[in-house]
Image (cartoon, rainbow, N blue to C red):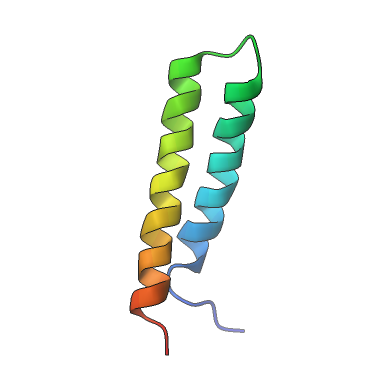
Length: 57
């Protein structure tokens, strides 16, 4: 089974974005850390999606 280029960063970014979002919803968490994790995950989703679209065949 071959994994398309960009699939791993997209999947990783989705998991990290979900973690950041969950931290943002929790009352006792540090909001700056939660926003940083959320943004880091979104960046991976965007970059992975760009690779998927650029290299589709």
